[in-house]
Length: 501
Image 1 (cartoon, rainbow, N blue to C red):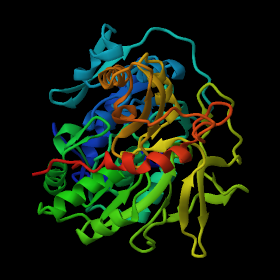
Image 2: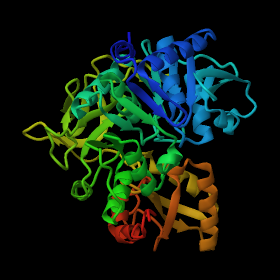
Image 3: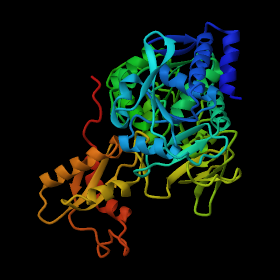
Image 4: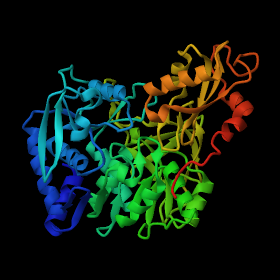
C-alpha cells in the first residue's frame, strides 16, 4: 500500500475541507482529491493498462494522473516536456507503454499526432486528460515492484529508464517532508516540471504526506519555458501570489531570482525553505541568495537513488556542502573517491538485468564526508556535465552530431553549471563562420533544448596529440582545452542572463 494514498485518505477524514491541490482550473480539498483519485483510477483500471506514459504541463491533471495510476497499480512513465520527440518516442517504446495520458493541447502534437484519442473526465469542469492508444509493441523487461520509470534528462540521445518502487520514492518524500519541516499550513509552489523526479517527490508527495497544499500552475504562468527559458519577475510574482512557503529550484533559476531581488524587485514574503539541487551551486550564489532574504539549502541526489541523497536543513546547514545524507541512505566511497550510495537504490534499468538489493549505486561523482557527516562533492568522474538548469549532457553526444556537419572538423562542448552550452570548433578547410553557424543551427534543430549550443569559438589550431589536446587514440583532452581556451569561453557568459524589469 502507498503511504501517500493512505495519507490523503487520512487527511480527507480528519480535515476534509483543507486545501490539497491548487491549480489554475480548480482547487481540490483533501476530500475532493480522494474522490477524484478513485474516479480516475477506476477509468484507467477498466482499460486494462499496465504501462502508461504521462505528458502534461504542471497542473491538476498531472497530479491526478500520477496518483490514479498509483491507485490502479499502473506503471507510469513521466515524459519531461523538455525531451525531444525522438526521446519521448524512445522512452515509450523501450518501456513498452500501451498508452499516453496527455494534456489535450499536447495530444495532437509531435509523435502523438494521428493516434486514437479518448477523453477522460476528471470531474473538474472543462478539465480533461486525453488517453492516446499507442501501437502494440513487445512488452519491456521491467523489474518486479516497479511503480514508476523515470527517464533522465539525457546522458545520450537515448536515455535509460530508471525503475523505482513506490516505497523507495515515498521514503525520500517522507524524509524531505521531515527535513523541510513541512506542516499542514504550508503551501508549496511547484517550479520545476512535475515530470522531474525531484519535483514529483518533493513538490507533490511531500506536501500531501504532511497535509499541506501543492500549488500546480502551468510553467508559462510562473515564468518557465522549455529547459532554459526563464523570467524571474513572473516567478517572484507567482511565489507571492501563491503565498508559497516552500519551493525547489535549480541553480540557474536561483541566480535569476537573486539578480532580480538585487535589482529591486520584492522577495516573496512567505518563503521559509527553498531547496536547491539538480546541479552544483556556487558558494557565492548561496551567500548572495541568503543576503537577499531567500532561505536556500543545497542538496544532492540522482534518479538511481530515487532523487535526493543529502540535504542541508535549517537545523543542520553547512554552506558549500551537499548536506548530511538522509536517514535512509548510506554513503561510502570507492578507492578513487567516487561516491557510492546504498539503502534506497533503484531496481534496475528498463530491459537490463535487475539489480541486487544490496548493490550500491556508483554515482560518478567524487567526494568525501567531513568529520561532522556533511557530504562534499569535488568533481565528476566522467565527462558528462550538468547545466545550471539541472540537465545532464554528455558532450560526446553533441560533439558527434556537430562533427557530422561538412563545415565542422572537430568540436568540444562545455556547459558545466552554465545556463547554456558553448562549443570550441575547428572548422573544416574553406568553411566560413556563416557555414559553421548554419551547421550549428541544423544540429540544434535535432537536439533537445538543454543540449543545444548557443555560442561557439573558433579554435586557433586543430586538436592533435602533438599539441596535447587529443589523446593518441583520438579522445579530447578537455582539461588541456580549458587551460588554453577557458578564459575565452568564460567571456561568452558575461552578457546579462535574464530580463526582469
